[in-house]
Image (cartoon, rainbow, N blue to C red; front, side):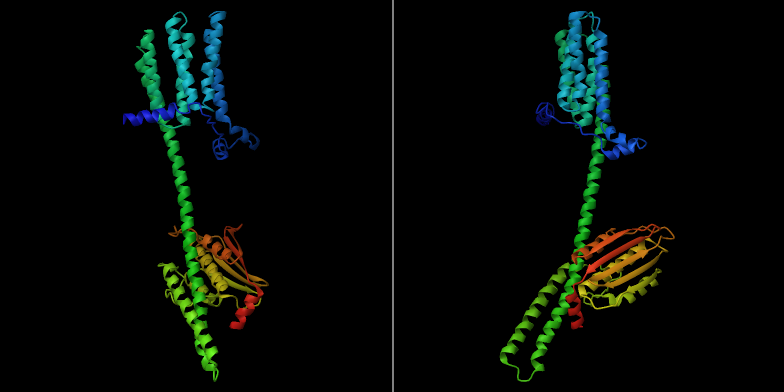
Length: 437
């Protein structure tokens, strides 16, 4: 323990003691919180308020020290002036080299103790401000660095002070009260520093936790999307396998080469379907959404199933109106599935977060893609706390981005919420889908 304590003391007070560690200005959020009444032009300069306070304190220390010894004569006046500069430089130095400022202040304090023993006729000229300045410097160093420096500087200061007093045979009757008072001040400063450090760590932990929760939700949503799109692919692969198996029987006297090709197509389709089903078992969620089918092998919903979804939410108490703009046409199954899920999630959020509000679903079949707009009004009563993760919008945005589309989600002027998305669809994809149908 002693070896560890000495090692930490050496690292804190001796290694790179005069390293350049400038104190950054205040953050804009702190300035706004502390002085909200300050004009915006002055807030930029208010960020340097701690530096100004410390510099002003250094100026006051110089004036106080020099004033107490200005009548000591020309020669001693020069010494007092130089000594005053050293004493006043230590607080200002804490803004750039905090540990070095402590050593400078400690040196001036020890010089004042020795000077009191030698210049017994003018003791207050040196000791009147050296110790209070040293205590202020130690407090600033603790607030700028770490709490444990309070103990280390306290031990070094009064250990060196006691040695100097013994060597100079100076009286030490006031040492115990001074040590006790210094300990109280430094403990208070260490407590403040520890509290600030703890609060900073809590904020960082909360930020990391929120980022991890968002990342986990994003991964879960991607797994769900991968599972659903996999089901779409599995459906088409099953059709390919069935058609390849039945094709030779639709033609009389099928050439052996053609029959072999159809058999190879079927074998590859079945192998791919088997692998896809294996992947599906890995990514399938154990807790499907409330509006999702309980049967994992059921066909994935499309916009043709929108009426049943609207009936479901109407049964849950939501007044919803559906409007379809443009000529309805078949779209790729992945696009229709994602559009269905976006409408589903938006209406689910309306039920959870806007009770008593009306909703409107607009589906626009436009040239080049599909437009979606789900908007609800302001809630008529307070919403109950929702146990969800609060990342439904993140999942909707992820679906749209995976299909190369764009989406916006924001509050409306009347207190409601609007989700608008556009999913691009190439013309040949629509045509191919319609032809297959």
